[in-house]
Length: 318
Image 1 (cartoon, one colour):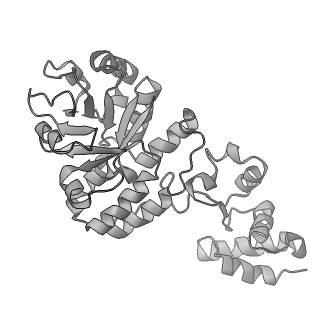
Image 2 (image 1 turned 180 degrees about the vertical axis):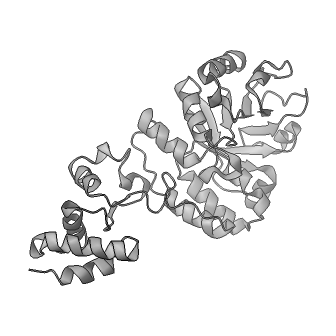
Image 3 (image 1 turned 90 degrees about the vertical axis):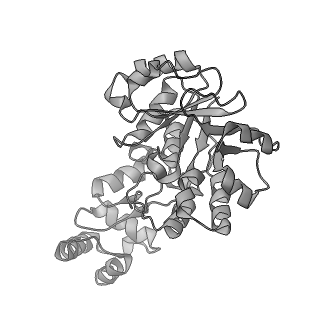
């Protein structure tokens, strides 16, 4: 069974957020689709959330686990050759694929491997096979994003037989992006086939507000404009068969498809936009309207807003 652990709260620790703000984030993470939510012990002491069944507590030292009998999962950074104890997952940093053979890598208990940024630059299938053989199938992989391919590494790990991955929302902390991992595995592995991920954009907007980060409008899954379509041929294709252009429906992630009118639009785009705005396309001279909106889009060097489009459309009503 696949296990996805979210590390967002650990990555938010340096921001010094208020407990009320962190409770908001935690509540949305519980709805994100992750199986477990990692939380630093210091933060847990402040929040003491009622819902702990999905909690992984990050400890400063393994012996601290005895202080939290209500928690069943723990993780602790391993230093040197010291073990963490059977009840606590040990977290180790591997910066090079050769370090998988490091003799100090204790594989007797639960293990999280962090790093391996460049694993996809190697024969990653062989690397993953060696790691699984050495550490067992339950090893958790937390790829880092130094080479901008952490999400791909996390998904390939699962496709190669890995059963556990760790990520952080939006790729915070240089980790794989939780939302991208969730949706990629939903598409390619049918992970949680009946799930809804509609709370993900809400979580993105909340984090933008709390930590003054701005996720790209084109960022996979949570970008504001990822379902905007301008090109006429793309609009025509989406209207006929959406799955040819979209890996998942906009509604799955709380989004909606929006047709943007600009210089690349075609007749189908204009007609679809009119219908989207609640007016009958048959009431307008589509060829002349198309020529007018293309001209205006070229003049302003940008697509048209809905208001600009309708102002032009009214001049071409039949």
